Image 1 (cartoon, rainbow, N blue to C red):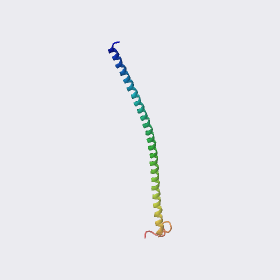
Image 2 (cartoon, rainbow, N blue to C red):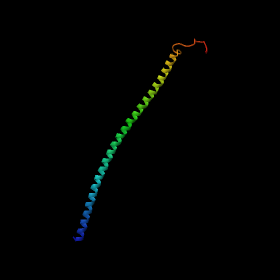
Image 3 (cartoon, one colour):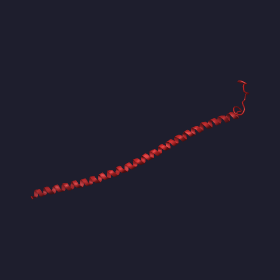
Image 4 (cartoon, rainbow, N blue to C red):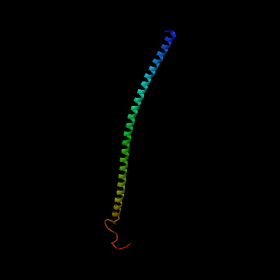
Length: 103
C-alpha cells in the first residue's frame, strides 16, 4: 500500500467516525424531542381536564344564577302581597263589597 492509499483510508475512516458521531448526536436529539413531545402531550391532557372542570363550574354558576333570579321574582311577588295586605285590600279585606262597582 502506498502512502497515498493509507492517507485515503485514514480520511475515509475519519469520515466514518464523524458520520457515526453525528448519527449518535442526532439520536440523542431525537430522544430529547420524543421526551418533549411526551411532556407536551401530558400537559395538553392536563389542560383538557382543567377546561372540562372550568366548563362544569360555568354551568353550575349559570344554574345558580337562574335560581337566584327565580328567588328574586318570588320575593318581589311576596312583597307585593304584603303591601296589598298592609293597605287593607286584596287578600284580607276588600275595600268595596262585591258588586259595588267602581268608586
